[in-house]
Image 1 (cartoon, rainbow, N blue to C red):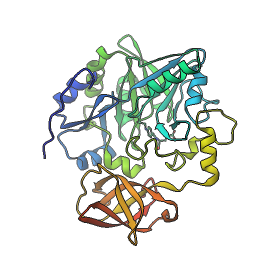
Image 2: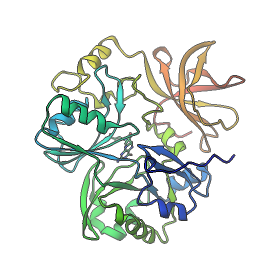
Image 3: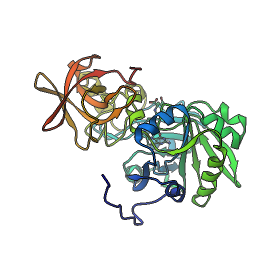
Image 4: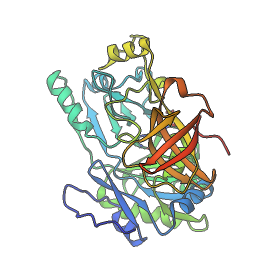
Amino acid sequence: MSSPKLNYSRRIRSTPYTSRVEALGVSGYSVVNHTILPKGFQNSVEEDYWHLKEHVQIWDVGCQRQVEICGVDAAHLTQLMTPRDLSHAQIGQCLYAPMVDENGGMLNDPVILKLAEDRFWLSIADADMLLWAKGLALGMKLNVAVNEPDVWPLAIQGPKSDDLVSRVFGNSIRKIGFFEFEKYPFMGRDLLVARTGYSKQGGFEFYLNDFTLGTALWDTLWKAGEGLNLRPGSPNLIERVEGGLLSFGNEMTRENNPLECGLEKYCQLDGSIHYIGLEALQKIAKSGSKQAVRGVIFEGEKCPPCQHPWPIRLDNRQIGYVTTAIWSPRFEQNVALAIVDNNYQSPNTPVTVEVSDSSFSNGRVVDLPMQDP
Ligand code: THG
């Protein structure tokens, strides 16, 4: 099925890598943070999945926009925005961090980069956190500047990532720790390189800080991939679901709190840290969450994309809903992320997934990340 064409404009932004992605035959885009995100190339999502798990891919993730917060009150504002305790964060560290409103509702789940004591980047998921940060800064009279810098992430993901990037930047790059970053010179610029990325296969993200160098960075990495079976790719839905990586807007919205999203380990609830939503989260923690993100595996034909939550039933009672689902060639069944009510969380709880009015599939609840079949 071919999709209608997207009409570009200044609002729907391309990235420094778009010309390369199109030359390689990108087959479709999503839009994230008002920026296009490639969703596939010549191969099927299943072929891309196996390839990502065995080799190495280059992803245009320029849509992972940065919200830069700098100034005297930058650390204060950044901490106000997240339940994660940032007091021990080091310069050079990346921190996955839920962000919530005054009711504890999820607003975003960025990767925070601590660049200096007074300078942070929030590498955001799909919601306008710049406006929230600016509003807080203005209303609270904080001494900060909030901006979207000229920074365009490019990801190298897959088990051969270290081999590829070390060909360009030398062996020291292999020593970057998980969720840490270092700077490397690239064409007269300081290029920030982090061991992060939206897959469980390992890899790096390059935060290029000059749009005009995008094609040069892409071409350099592309050339270095010779003999490593490097392919263009994109965040892979099968791999993400099996790995239990959540997507803001899909698994969680402002209706969800981080405790039910499995993000409680990133929430400091003891009152030692002050942030927006603390009292709300403490209340929720006290009364106990009513539901949680779980994996579900279900039978049937390859399922269509989940555009609206699909009810999950047990004995005709709705006990949750699927938020993302896709066929897994490894399980030879459909795999899904779902929000499931508390009494039905145990692995192997049998459920029925209502894929459409006329299509019901038998399935079961599983732990995340999903274990080998
Ligand atoms: N990289 C960068 N920015 C991003 C994403 C990214 N912004 C949007 C989106 N992705 C944010 N969401 C996530 C979700 C999960 C992870 C990263 C970003 C992730 N989680 C690790 C895991 O679940 O294994 C745990 C990380 C930790 O424990 O600190 O990697 O991908 N730049």
